[in-house]
Image (cartoon, rainbow, N blue to C red; front, side, top):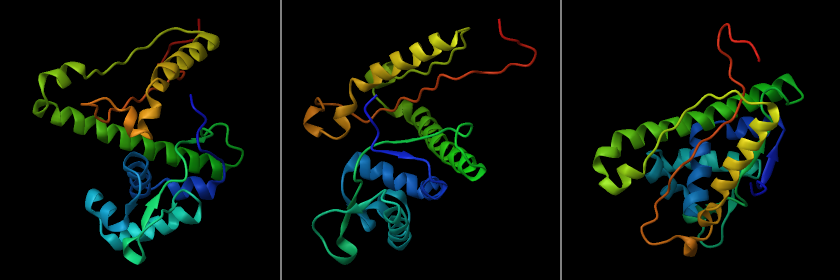
Length: 196
């Protein structure tokens, strides 16, 4: 996996990002490049004032910065780099850190689930080609810790094949559209099922 732009560990940073509107702003700036508060407001069905307020909060923690061009309300904003990593709720040092990491994970996964539901609802509107390309997969397997790590690394390697297309539009072939993959490889717990 490419090295993420930032590793988050400060509960204040985690909490600043763990807000649906702020996460949506960071996502849009990552996908679309520099946008003004008004442009963000139009895309997010928010007010420009609300987007401006959230942009200032994100800027306080270095998640966004002013881009070149524009003044006042017409100034565009950008992300200084792509990707974040944060420790999960079990490995962050403080209780506040664990809570903040869990809140950010919940916002992130909640947004991904919302996009999955929207994709499923809008699938009938898509061409047969795109409907046939969609897939949902879920599985449970008995693995050792080494096998789980190996599988996660293999999945990340496949996903990394196209990561440069996010920031380099010239790499996108004609007809390419944004697609999302969400994967987690974690221990799972079933009642009454003990390790082998």
